[in-house]
Length: 290
Image (cartoon, rainbow, N blue to C red; front, side, top):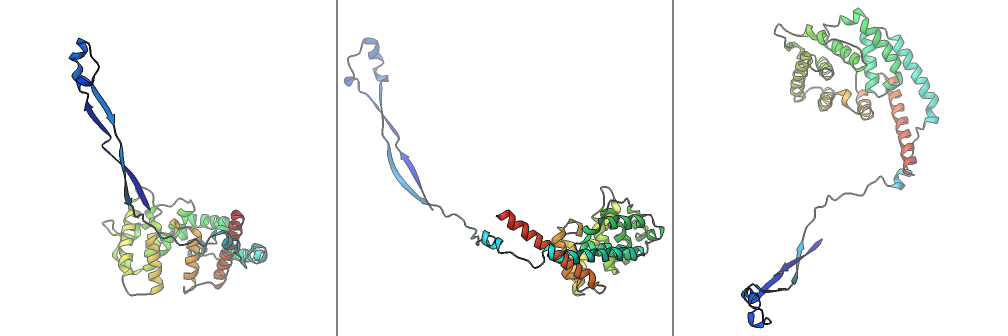
């Protein structure tokens, strides 16, 4: 785009008026004749052509125009799968009641949350975690870093009081986390996630965060199990409870398929729930667009 600028040159010129050209002044006025001036203004203009090259981001055309949004459709509308999803939710509730071992309950709750279906079972989670928080057998998990960190993290996520002193059993005489913990990758990942649930002044959790981040970064550079490395890289980007639930659910559903203890029923349930959610979002955005 060419921007034309107007330049002013010699805007005004001043000249003295010779006394001979003045009318016959009186004596007092004659003394001030040299002060008389004639002011003439002259304006000359010329155009200065300046080309300014403006930057462009080269934006591509948006695919989300009206016609595209109205063309969205899904085979997973709520009315088509409502009965099936309700039946599957009841099956999960029965599964939660049937699992009676504290660690198995914790793993199941954690899996359901990561699959993005935990919002269906908030009351069941509260009940199970309430029992775990007062169960003496669940408190004696000091020898298992993974179990201890998982219990601590889930209780804090759901508003239960739990002290970071549960990690004292994993520290040496100087108050540092013992180096042997590095052999337990699952435990280190669980401790890393739990450390982000610490309150201000909880030094144990601050040290645990620094320790696990340093170790997990080193582990990421090693040529080991690719699925585990993928989980480590994902966790180091952001801890689980800082992420957007639906985006996290999609990532974990794809990851869950490759896990050794994958439950096919939970996998199918999570996929159906996710697709039904997407269908609802599409219906809403079409209505808003109209």
